[in-house]
Length: 127
Image (cartoon, one colour):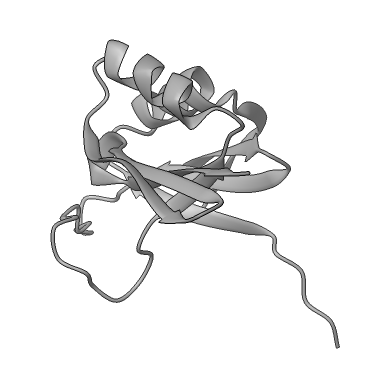
């Protein structure tokens, strides 16, 4: 048996706002809009991978805290060729930078931003 990555699914307080955020800031392409058991889902493609976004249901709670490490999804990460320029653009758009550019090792720079609903997003540049 072999396995492949298919998608990661995020619950959102406003999935349209979240979809717009990823389209505007990461060039996400909308793949499909669909519904499962009354739950509308939007699938985006970013860098060849699929991400699903849907509204949280009335009886669900979503932990949006990013301060303390917890079990479950920690963050998502996107790689770029010019981290300094991309962080400057994010700051100009008013996006919250939760950790400014740092050096992970001699060939890798990183930073973190906060997306809608507290989604933690790591931005990387690997030289």
